[in-house]
Image (cartoon, rainbow, N blue to C red):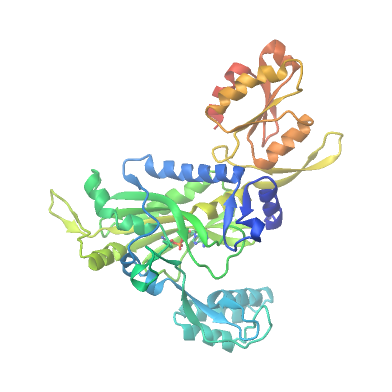
Length: 472
Ligand code: GAP
């Protein structure tokens, strides 16, 4: 059963995971700020990905600039093709993505049991590639504007999703640059640099984490579709002809990565594309079951030599690999893995969120809200509770706290009952709570309580750091 997004949003704000961007001015649509706990979780997600990608022999890291030479976007096809089909309602003036409008309509037909009609419209949508095709479906089906309820539509027009700005003081066409809509092109334009400065040869990859920007028309569902977001992308350069085998390999690696980091397997599925992006000849998404339904979190794309060939043509610089032994020369094919750091942050948050009924302090049934993050991703790894603020308990706990703090994000809490302190930590997903009580003064041990099982065990204080290291 999916969890309501509202409860997750409210917890995120209340406990400092995510805030609306520039909230005191009423917020900026499609942009979000990561608070004290959110930034830890986001960094942990990125760290887990970076390690999985770069702690191996055949992948190098990169951090390319966000602003790139504008020719990049001509070569990549983003200037010409990175567009959404848009339609305006003449009465409400509301602007919609034409394909989304049709998808929502298909969904409604399905809910009403009109399966044949839904399938027929879906088949037309799958074939639609020009503005007139989308427009014809909307008119034929008499799809209404969700705002005004009318069918008074303009024509469908394409709208480019790249944000434009200018370098230098003069705002004219020759100074136009774009905020990158994907990190991948920073990797492609550095392919030769990495090849020439390392000892890599195909098959090898380049991994990068960084911000990307898209002027999305509909920003919706919290972090799912935003205008500023972070991507974690890896381009794997291979010999033409080996793309099928590497595509399968990388799909499997990436699917397992989510499971290894605590994703519930029943909330994940793979979805091969029927319609490809302009650069791909095969593509499969990894989808997660969000509270609002299934949504893509990662795309694995077989991009052929589309990007390198285009950069070769537009820059006039050879983008080939030459094998010094066999004299074999070719422009490598590319398998891309592309995942949103912010979108997978949201998936990990939704996956972790649980509301459980448990026995409360006075025998009453209570609701426990818990974020069951994988310990590697949890923003805070442990909390230290001196049972009371007297009898020398804080003094006994303090050296342990300081020692753990050298390596882990830990919290100190002395206020309220132990039950309340557990609830506060459960709500932010802290895997371990360590209580120093009066017995600790005699046996130099502490009680460690596990977030998920709620079981407690007694461990010598001197062994706690090793316990945490093993558990994390
Ligand atoms: N280089 C290929 C590429 O960018 P994409 O399917 O457009 O492919 C890849 O994006 C991933 O980036 C998506 O699976 C998603 O996780 C993330 N992403 C894309 N657009 C996004 C947006 N507007 N907001 C948040 N994440 C987004």
